Image (cartoon, rainbow, N blue to C red; front, side, top):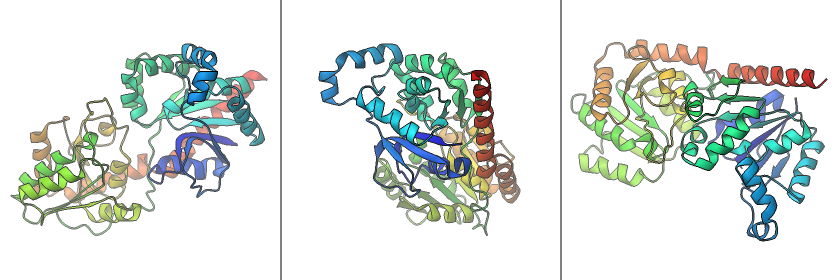
Length: 384
């Protein structure tokens, strides 16, 4: 089934979940519609680049269509004029049968054109598009108008669907399908005793400074414990300064950004995965972190928080422990409990089994295809 994948940026190597759809969905029978084309095309796909925002010239020369789009659809990003005809030509030339938007915010400008062409259209909610984005009244209004009219919605966690519903945004054909992980590539290896790892951007949502402080306290009682935090971002300098201030440079490594292979190797050899996810001040949340799914596949015990979709994957005493958001004391106690436990190997084994059962990206890709095919067939039947 020829599918147009709609995304904000193409190509971004860290967006493994989107890249997998572009490369593999329906055997790779895909093309790409993107707001920003970064001139990398490793999958050799046909690419259409649309403007992410109206140009100044458009604002001056075509204010009425932009205003009408804003009033009717809640966004001025709806293609019109030549941009509209060019996108229609691209969809027709590519013989597109289905449109899949990889973020809720990206579906808004495409849905009117899909309706005009009679193309089934779906969207995937992944985190910020169903959390921070809801802080904008205009986005909520646009979602309420658009989302119920889509042919279907998929989210990486039930939390995101519930979050949308709390804002009056629902679709009758809604499904939960996590991004998943390649469980044939991410696998447990020989674990270094009491080794800890964290992976992710050094941003408020990941609370890396909380993880460092918690580890510093627990490490006093576990001299063999070590922590590696892989990732860069605005809090990296503060994290390195905190490690120096706490005098734990010999126990904590902060290498910055790592390759996918480096991340995989760190997860495979570590016993414990740490991530103190919180809701950022701007409302940004996780969906269900890919790093946690990868850590589970590698047989790590998870120490994290009751945040977004994480409680859907981590269960106290089974494959890890959860504290409340910003409960630094509880988070620290949970890490200490894990490092003192004789059940780390068993909990890590449970993580692996759960990843195989629930987060195998091959199985999840098949589930996504099945849902899309079923709903497209239903729509075709209604039209005929």
